[in-house]
Amino acid sequence: MVTRRRTDGTRSAADDGSPGAVEEVAGGEAAEAGSGPLAAVLRPVRAGNGFEETLEQVLQLLRLGLVPPGDRLPAERELSQHLGVSRVTLREVLKVLQDQGMVESRRGRYGGTFVLPRTNAADGSDELLRRVAAVDVEDTLRFREVLETGAAGLCADGLAADGAGRLRAALEATKGARLEDYRRQDTLLHLTLAELSGSRSLAERYASVRATLNELLDCIPLLVRNLEHSQQQHAAVVEAVLDRDAEAAREMMREHCAGTAALLRGFLA
Image 1 (cartoon, rainbow, N blue to C red):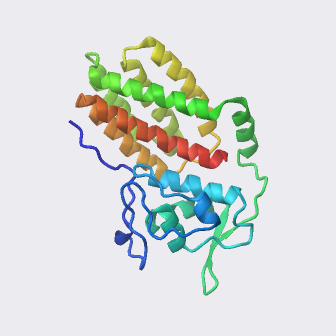
Image 2 (image 1 turned 180 degrees about the vertical axis):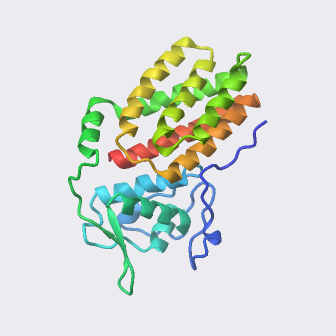
């Protein structure tokens, strides 16, 4: 049997060396979250996808305009309290936003993280809007989760003679993939799971949903932190399948799908 574990790779604030940081706890309970606009938008993240859900919520905060361009984001301590995450996780999210040209970090007595004006840079945002308008994103994400969790459970119930070898090979290919080739190898791993489920209809439906999903994923940045987390989840799903633990396989796949959904919702908002 597979032991359930957290796969988001985040650490408690007690480990990040920051004085006064809030501890990250299972279930995402935050201490002294306070009230006001932040409390209305930000909520404690759930265990399992700490990085992705934190990114989703901070992106929502920016896109709602609650912190206008030129203004400083709330202090790390306050944000971490509202979100129930460690400063380590929060700083990784802020680094992603800085890399995307959405915020900038300033040092000194009046330093902090400041919101930058939004631009119409050729970063795929127009193409993303076109693709989003053409599909029902929430329906796609829900259907994807149903198919993925179903496939994982069916595979755990029993694989074909060559199934274990194919699954291990597909997982290994994602581990050694270059950044620019990762999404293709990721797709192949998920398609292998769908095919090994033993249901031709499921595999066909999943191929169609995955094509739509990739259309959206191709318009958002590849985040190394997220890919590392996804890889941990992939390994946990495969381990559960090979151990014939259908419940754990379904649960780990559900968590994996939730992470992708949080990432897309963050960038699509």
